[in-house]
Length: 232
Image 1 (spheres, helix red, strand yellow):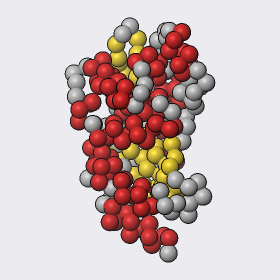
Image 2 (image 1 turned 180 degrees about the vertical axis):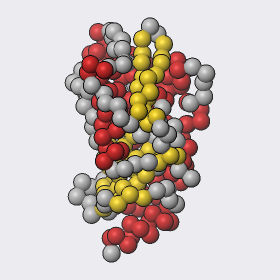
Image 3 (image 1 turned 90 degrees about the horizontal axis):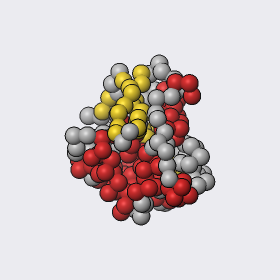
Image 4 (image 1 turned 180 degrees about the horizontal axis):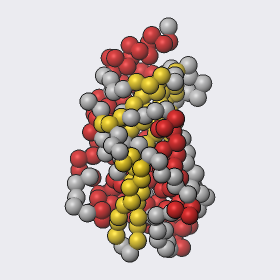
């Protein structure tokens, strides 16, 4: 089974006074500047220099894409970093999908994050912290270690668990701290997520939009059969 959307469909991080909290957002909420609920922490000059002129620093929501942009098939996956079914998909289906369809130029693959909770948002912000070149490698590590990094009784512990993943990818704590404290980027991510998921009528994860058609979770054999039929 896939994870279905609860009534509360997103959570935004509040980072202030050394702690973490959340404000839930309903589907009818908008994220406007005057409604901001994320306190932006003061950053050091060193961390600002590290992030200068990056998409994260400029609060851009970059579409994360793999494969030939002119491929005949486009798959848009909606997934949450805290969704067990999404982890299973990325462990058991995605590797063969990448090898046999994405890397061979048959599929353009777009990954869109779903934010069920604050942890999923934090993970998405961390994955984007390393830029497009590191994104999918970080995403893979986040999925593979999902049960480990989500373990913890408080936000600070979980944030430190995520930092351990980022360090493996070559990021330092100052860089990651600034990424997770960027309220404007968090707001932009949530607003983009809500806009895209509502447009595609996404109600569970993982959801696969294949050439505009919505599909639920499936095995690699089922997915390969569908893709080969489209390619014929």
